[in-house]
Structures are given as structure tokens and as C-alpha cells.
Amino acid sequence: MTRSLFESGMKPILLNNIILKPLFYLFGVTLLFIFGWRSEGRAPDIHKYVLIAAPHTSNWDFVFFLLIIFKLRLPVYWMGKRSMFRWPFQGLLKRLGGIPVDRTEKNNVVLIMAKAFETSEKLIITIAPSGTRTTGGSWKTGFYHIAREAKVPIACGFLDYKKKTGGIGSVFHATGDMEVDMAAIRFFYSGISGRYPESPLL
Image: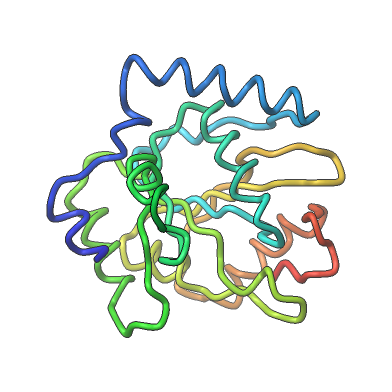
């Protein structure tokens, strides 16, 4: 349960470990170099925000975005569908900040995450908006509602397969006018190519 994760005081221990942090950094830098990728931009100087990971059109997105996170040395939580968290990798994924979410259950993830932001001094939650891996699909807006309810900004993390670059770009604040805000976010991602560009960005 998402609720028990935060109520138990769990942290992404491995990403915060003072000894392991440099190793994750070297691991990320090395693999990005081997794959021919480079990072752009820098992490926002903000203690709390929702970080979009997009466009999400392939399972490889998780791998490359995680390497970018390692390089930027960001101790982030990330939300993923519960089916990802299977033995024998379940424990490792959670210690890397993974939060399993069962999308078939009617639980109030928005309010739970907003409460987590309220009770944390520093918190970054990464969300790959669901729906973008299905051609003809569109983004679900849970990330927007979490940011608005928690009163935290939204940072646009990206992976551009055409340029083989990834990083963090613009930062937006939810105004309450979702149509206008989503149009601004759509504009940011308009020049970015996912692994399968035929899948829509928004």
C-alpha cells in the first residue's frame, strides 16, 4: 500500500546512502556513455516537486530515466504499476524509491501523495503518465492533481530518443486551469521524440 510506505517512514535508502551515491553516479554516467546518451539541464533547486518522466512509449524509458536520475544524484520516489514489483526484484525496486500502485483499486492516491508532501521536508515523486505507451492513448492526469493538491510545482523530465538526450527542463505551477496548464506542458514536449514517436505525447 502507498499509505503504509509513507506512514512507516521508509526512504529510498540506496539513493540516499552516502557511500553508494557516488557509485550510482558512476554507474549512470558509464552506462549513458556506453549507450551514447547524454544528459541536459539540471535538477531544480526546489525541495518538493512532482517530476514527469515522459514521453513514455517503451519499457526502455524506465532504464534510461533511472540512469539520468543516478547521474543527477536525485533521491527520488517513483510510482510504477504493481506488476513491476515481482520477486526477486521487488525489494531492490522499493529500496530504489519505487512505490507500487494498483491502478485497478479505487484508492485515493492523490490525497495520499499530497499528505506525503505535506509531512516531508524534501520529496520528489516521479510519475510516468499512464496511457502514453498505447498508440492513440492520452495522458492520465494524476500527476497534475497530485501537484495541485500538494501545492508543489511540476518539473518536466524528458527522454529524447532522436537526440539521445535526457534530463529535466521546464518547471510549471498548477494554476487550477488544467486545460491551459496541460497546453503549456504539451508545448514543452512537442519537440521531443519518444522511442516510438507514433505514440502521442498528450
